[in-house]
Amino acid sequence: MEKRLKNYISRMEALLEQENMSAEERRALGEEVLVQIGFFQHERLVHLIVTVTFALLTMLAILGCVLAPEPMLFVLVLLLLILLVPYIRHYYILENGVQKLYTCYDRLVSNKKR
Image (cartoon, rainbow, N blue to C red; front, side, top):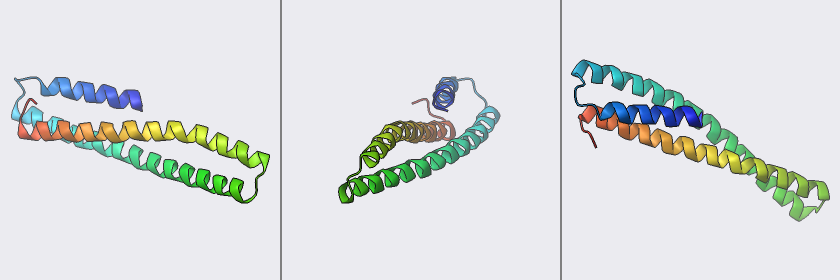
């Protein structure tokens, strides 16, 4: 998803630099951008839910380690932390990518280059 998002943003920025785009082309491109934003927002919401769930599970496991220090709970905390870091990174990329798409859309409807 990261690669798809970055490729789409690059494509949008290249299209926005074109000066010979008609109003009809801009309108059609605007509709396409809104559809893609919807797809990426959905993906972002799903990853937010997963990330928050893993964060809560990690906090519960840490609390379990404090209340009842068991070696397997420490292993569980370590595994959850290892999984949590990539989830946070992926959510960060999705969030920033969607924000860039908002900017691209705003530039498209306002007919500005930068």
